[in-house]
Length: 399
Image 1: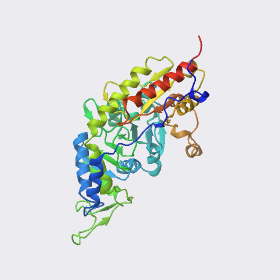
Image 2: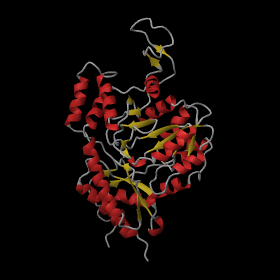
Image 3: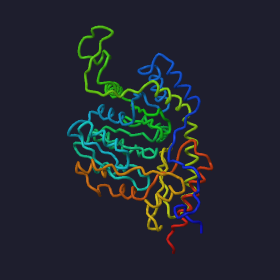
Image 4: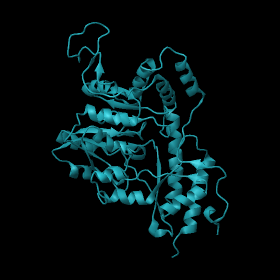
């Protein structure tokens, strides 16, 4: 029987393979260099070009780019009017920013449990958590799969709740044929390096609502405006501007925007390769009863950001932590997305307790993220599959 690397055997790979990595080509570099040589490094034409391109990609009417995905979520909550005394419902299986955006506005995050097959927030659980204080729902497209938007849209419309879709993982995904970004009241994106397209950092908010659009522009830039339709006093001249709200400096630079613009030209190429890798993984891992493959709703044509592998510890002699360690010994560096938000010490100090979302907690205990990005070679994918199969075969419970 082949020995595990952690027990002294030969690792599957000589060099480490990480769970995510950006892809930068000559066109990206040339785009950034052109901007560096131009007259504008910020507040320039690359910003406008990127916002227009995001609208074309998603089908949304308006786009406002910003400094990062967290800023995008904060701006969306501000535009939605989230304030002290309000509640914002979100999933615990997400990066902390999806809940922190409510705290930034003085509101209370409320966590709804997930669907145990798709790992996305369960609309039925959202409905159970709605109160008269619910101002918004931040629904996260976990791994890139669109949340089940139809029931969430109906619920929010019926109850007068703002639907914010956290699409940090899901640029390029469609739901019922519509692009993510064009369905919710507001949708946020992230351009962090491990995302499908990157600007180094960067974010955006998409909306079809002009009122939200104007508020997003305001909150992106200190709460200051030159828009004559929004001024509270008579303009004194073309130089005149007013601060009419308390905003942050959440502007994106033209340097970042030029990189995202170039990356978006490769979106179809990125989508195709990510789907190929996911299909290879699914085919291999679905044949192993010791493993669980994430399910997708038929409405979501998904561009996957993360590949989640879930183990059945009752069928193995090891737990997730050991499986994770064994993968590292094979020189395949995985990650875990995510620790349930309310299990962080900061949230525990706010009064959130373990057991709040049992399905989310069970998922966390048994999952890990495998390598998934455009530049993975077929050999890399084979190595990941080989490593997983090797560990399963060496730790399978004997019948």
